Length: 347
Image 1 (cartoon, helix red, strand yellow):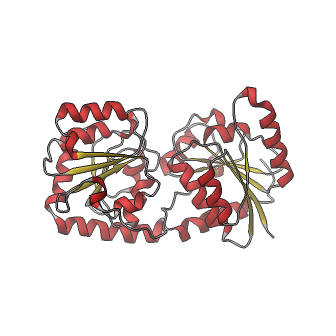
Image 2: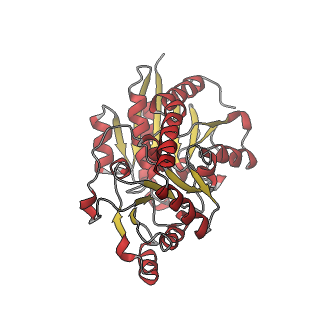
């Protein structure tokens, strides 16, 4: 029996969830017992990647109440596809997708307001903490499923340090993500004061960009920070860095942790929700308290000063990724769950 699966996202121009939406669609498309269609906002690069992978796509605005005609067209197109399972991503897609003659599965990558998800039949949390959040919010535990992400495993060349005016021998730190207060990049910039020989590549854009640049100037570290904007392929940066730093205050899973593991880049992270769940301190990375500059600077210093420790953490983390988070492992978990749900009676 072939499973008919619709995946629906109304995401923004850039983002980790949007990138993983493409990766998971393409990975599941390789399974012969799944027929898919993607429903998404217009995004030329995202749509091109899906089409080149052989997937069918349809674009909709997924707008507010004034776009009622577009909502009607979306719901008609979804019904015409006659899916067995519909998997929605994030708030907007979940809110606008009605219950129907299919299993409606919401995939949550963060600690979202659960009012957008209560009409669903099943829920996937990408971390155990998010699953606990769902159960604590009233979702039946037997219908809450834990499946994490996998990283992009396509080989890419490393970015040359010279591309961002970085000398070849200096310690190179990398951080990446939306420039938002939750990511704690201000704490990392303060920690950089304590590591005067290091250069930081900060990949991302967002509302805190101007404030972070101003902070770097105030602290006298602006000449050692490269604000490189949104970067579509974090692996190419990880291959150039000496270590990755994730200073988040709040983080759903921390998918970039998986990217660092896969690319053998040792990691220092704060013990926020996702990274604190993923990383075993001293084994697959180093963990420091949230919002504390000195412990973060100390852990970074420890890895800069101890190359054998960096290598040991990177090797162990790579092995852990291959066993628990690889594309093959995670795709099989999705395949087993979705096939198991198809044809079941809605609760």
